[in-house]
Length: 141
Image 1 (cartoon, helix red, strand yellow):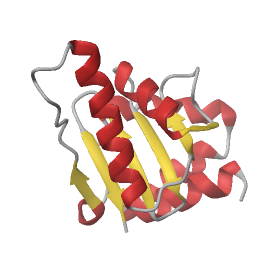
Image 2: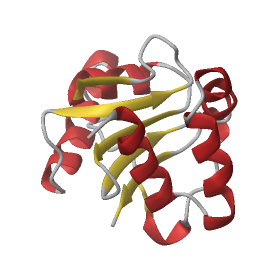
Image 3: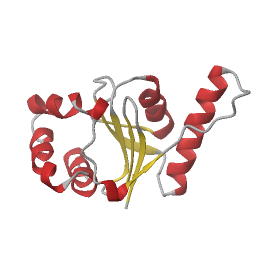
């Protein structure tokens, strides 16, 4: 599957129907892609039927770094329990990681460490994770 096919499957599966064509047109052009990724930090055009909030459950007695690592481990475990593999496809307003296949844990760490909007597509059109400025969401069919 090409990167474009991967992103198309994610958009068609999890975005509101009336917004899909707009975002599909953005990903087809590197020039317009930035219009799409720029909206990710406060993105709210997901189809509500397929999203679940992912709380950041960590042991408060751990150090700050320990809580950070435990949170990433918890989200990674959730995604793996739903069928995620070792890698994921990244769509992000962070240009350092956007448009890449990455190790799931590395991608999660980058998504959590930045206030950028990031979508980690784990199974095209079936499973993804979204980290925005204020939201942490599981996208699953």
